[in-house]
Length: 194
Image 1 (cartoon, rainbow, N blue to C red):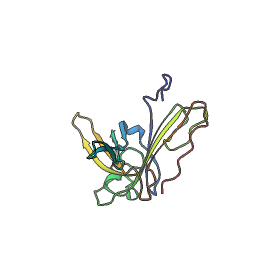
Image 2: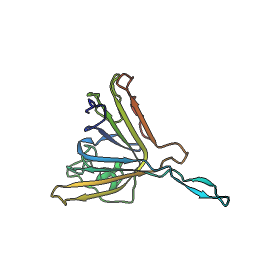
Image 3: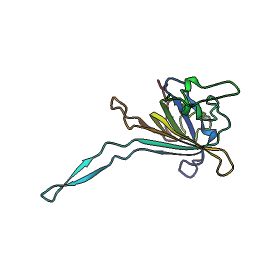
Image 4: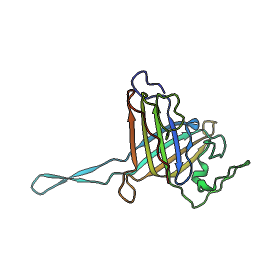
């Protein structure tokens, strides 16, 4: 990643980890991604005395969109997310020719994104070296809600969307941001997602 100008740019690592499965690195298939946390919105309520009270709304769901260039239907090789959309990742076809057929199954995922100048970092959920810049955001409880293939510009692309709640059923937050300065200790590895 380029950090010479004091900003994270150009290169990132992206990991998709199905609940109870194994993490897969997808950065080599992704052209762009856009993680959006839900708003903590509200509105002013007019009181009859002319005053206002703030009525807050629950934090909205998050959404992560990605544009990929799939090479096959291989989940394990980090080439495509179709098997995460059509069927359980645990049922993913790992042999050639690969095949996946849509089902009613829906996996839960953790999506992690890492920006770092640690040249040895190879996974978004892994450690970063002490003395390196690193910033990571991870989303749990994500569902792969959209998988749309297109050949509109004469190149096969896929637009995918992950969505998830701001909190799990026990009211624990599902979005975590971590960072370390270029003089810090480095980031620890993420725990398994199960």
